[in-house]
Image 1 (cartoon, helix red, strand yellow):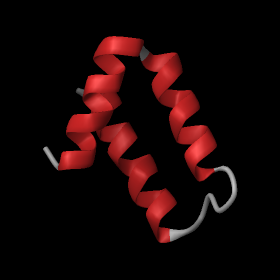
Image 2: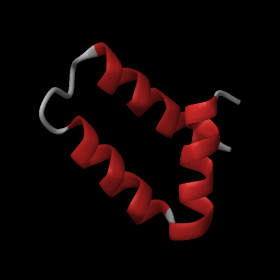
Image 3: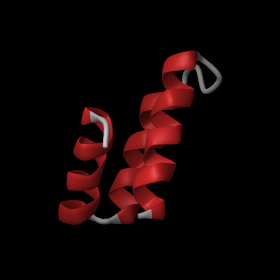
Image 4: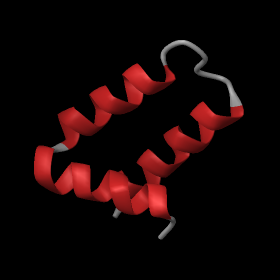
Length: 50
């Protein structure tokens, strides 16, 4: 698991799926198709699939 996936997993455990989704939405809202946003979205999906 990458460091960002570990961080997202901790957020998921402590705050729940809604908080994780909101975090990803707000962090990728300005440029949803930028490489950084896509990597963050992919990491979130990996965390949610576990």
